[in-house]
Amino acid sequence: MATIGSGVFIKRDALGEWAKNILVKVGVEDADAGIVADSLLAANLRGVDTHGVTRMLGVYVKRIEAGVMNPVSRFDIVRERAATALIDCHNSIGQPGSRFAMRKTIEKARGTGAAFVATTHSNHYGAAAYWAMMALEHGMIDFSSVNTTATLAPTGGCQAMFGTNPFAIAVPAGKDIPFVLDMATTLVARGRVVLYAKQNKELQPGWAFDAQGRPTTDPRVALKGLLAPMGGYKGYGIAFAVDILSGILTGSNFGKHFPGMLAENLEKPTDVGGVFAAIDIESFMDLDEFSTRMEQVYAEVRSCAKTEGVERIYVPGEIEHAMAKERAQTGIPFPPEIRKEYIELGQRLGVPFPEA
Image (tube, rainbow, N blue to C red; front, side, top):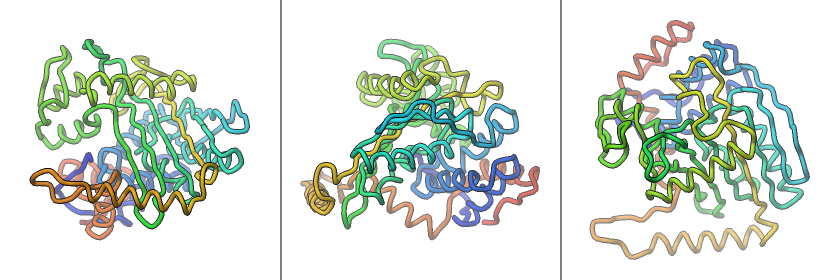
């Protein structure tokens, strides 16, 4: 998880309301501001601070104010069949378009058993898990992915050709917590490198390279260089596959054609593509039977023999679930550098940043 571990703690509800009001101030409609703020806050609660209010809200405001991202949403279904659809988001904020797409995916999967919906000409949509988890209450397995600005080189290369290209899958597990896997195809999300740079923290060895492909632990050097793929050539291959699904298939940008990093590109739309897929479990077996089998495999995994020094084995999503419960009580941590930025943003827009 890309988690901030220290700083001043801001209560969940106060932070969510502040984020929503900031977005409204820059022209986002109330309902859309609510879904954007909720998605960012959900990421913070789960410990994914790189995709939370702590990092992304300020970036969104900059892009809206620069005129390179539309604050008012507009969606057109440009292609549609019984189990598929392609939605043109016309450079709207990523979250409202993703909500529209996920609702359409769930609706179609109810009728066809499985559905695949994609968005084009969209923007950063927050944490992928937020969208994958939308189908859980409907008894469905969901997948979501999006392509991003290039930060990863193909195996053997030293030029950025693919993004961190994250994907998430969420699976209901009966009475237990859902299985939620949300991961970038690089060893670390670029957002964590940004947060480390703001906090003057060194990266872990192996996370990144400089512009010539040499290993570095300096986050500022890494931001001008490359990120390491997970699993070496396997991570590169998965990033490539996500780019095909999210970028090439949807008619959005792909590979090295993005106009620059979000916070640094204030001249052109990003034009990302997203994909959303849902499988109705009842198409394959009764939901109760599936839930029983999921609970069984959870119990077996947790009871696995442990290596020396390991106290507990977790299933994917369990650490984030526990973090969300903890932060719902303690609040969201803000390092001094980020808190200072947001206090100034709040003063400029007339929405005071919440007190600790």
